[in-house]
Length: 369
Ligand code: ADP
Ligand code: GN1
Ligand code: MG
Image (cartoon, rainbow, N blue to C red; front, side, top):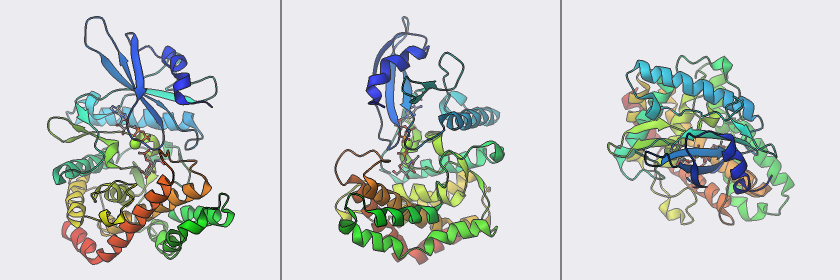
């Protein structure tokens, strides 16, 4: 499979966008898919934009099942949004089909591509610059959970098996350390030990699911701030994107992944760890907003376990980054050497910080229970 750029003319020819394409360039800061913004030029109107993505073959083995999930979820969301008097075109993604009727296009080498209209008048943020912005993302992800409450979960494929199976993620780390195929384990000893010391933690949410303490729901599973588009004028969270991992899962993980990424003031790959700190104030802001958006759908136990969601999503993500570093950066896109190692280090620092503030986090969620 070649670079995504080398397939663009073939792929663009497969979609009827209603006007000539005048350009396509790389777009966004996702770690997984190859994303392009496509511009068309209608005769009588200003340019229209689309998002074109080659789905990651490393991450997604069955693009057919993945796209069946996404068409099902976006159509369902569209109906729910309309029922609530919302604007379907701005608040939900819409899959555009290429000729042939499939919801995606397969290129000459088997790469799978999809197209969405660009949701205009929105911005995509990489950091929570203000508490209001973070709260808006929390309301949007909470609302997403509420809107999908009635979705038939049994019809969803597991697009990435064991995605938030933290026990399995740790087992994969151990295997990568044992193989140490690139001789990178020695320089990561501290991080490896940090993760291994938390082996028992890796079972906390899974055990709560197994014994019925926490329910399985339809969840997003990748709730980074940059996976919600915010209205350019009002700052409100408008449209949840990146639906690749919508699957049955735990609500505390959706909460937790947002905290992992957003409740701090540093980049995920920051190399100066003194800058990487959990912002407990932002934790509270997000807790309140997420529960407001979820509108009573979470049980008392789910609320009680929210700090665990935060800690486990951060620990798990650290484990995943480190595993990927050890095996040679096969999964997460990198733009420089050791980026995945640096990413794993920030996650360890955040986990340690969450532990240091644990009682405070528990007090906060109790307030909103
Ligand atoms: P990845 O899985 O690689 O993160 P995403 O689906 O999140 O891929 O897309 C990458 C980026 O593209 C997003 O962070 C966002 O900036 C932009 N994006 C994706 N879909 C849309 C859309 N429909 N409208 C506007 N921007 C979008
Ligand atoms: C990936 O696709 P993106 O960039 O939104 C990853 C998440 C990680 C995240 C870390 C499908 O998210 O699970 O938490 O990177 N998505 C997938 O930044 O693996
Ligand atoms: Mg994304």
